[in-house]
Amino acid sequence: AQKVTQAQTEISVVEKEDVTLDCVYETRDTTYYLFWYKQPPSGELVFLIRRNSFDEQNEISGRYSWNFQKSTSSFNFTITASQVVDSAVYFCALSEGFGGATNKLIFGTGTLLAVQP
Amino acid sequence: DGGITQSPKYLFRKEGQNVTLSCEQNLNHDAMYWYRQDPGQGLRLIYYSQIVNDFQKGDIAEGYSVSREKKESFPLTVTSAQKNPTAFYLCASSDGWSNNEQFFGPGTRLTVL
Image (cartoon, rainbow over all chains, first blue to last red; front, top):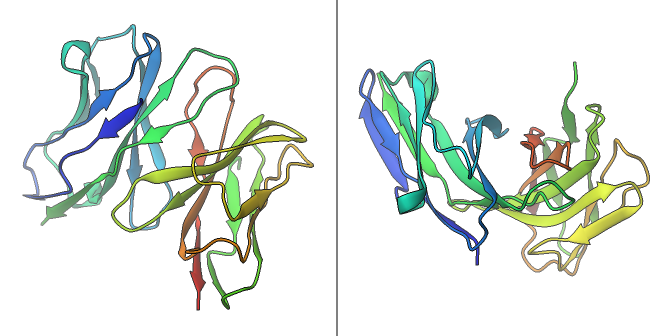
């Protein structure tokens, strides 16, 4: 069965610290997609990144970076030099299959990140 | 601006009443979704629709109903059969044929008194 585990319920850091949010997934499919979303206090989910199972290359976007490791079924997210505006709940999600009509996302329970000034 | 709108932002209803949550998108997306979020939990899929006049049950469809008469609209009705309807409801849409990311609306917080 598909499952996404975000073991860190809450993380608190001081501004400018680096922080890594963990995501571990389970799937029997060989083709799948992984996502990260940010949910600020306003409630709307903001898309951050999508990665497919054939692309293990790490990605960096500004202060954000993602480490995808199929060997450990992990897709971790690092924020470098955190800022107060990074405070939010972050969700990792999994989508199986390729193309077609099924694009259902399985979400983890989220990690609440609090960045203190 | 393209996006997804949900109305209202906050909704209060008495127990036993049906209530309909609105979701409209102007992104020209084929697929639309409804999720429920409870405190400290992730999002759980209620219903989804890949094309007009077609929709499928998600993981927690009991007590909910939907319709998809127009491409841009996917309203969700929370019926009196839903045992615990108080929650945050999020609507999303996607170009549903290539595992593209889903775009979310601002959500509706429903409180049943």
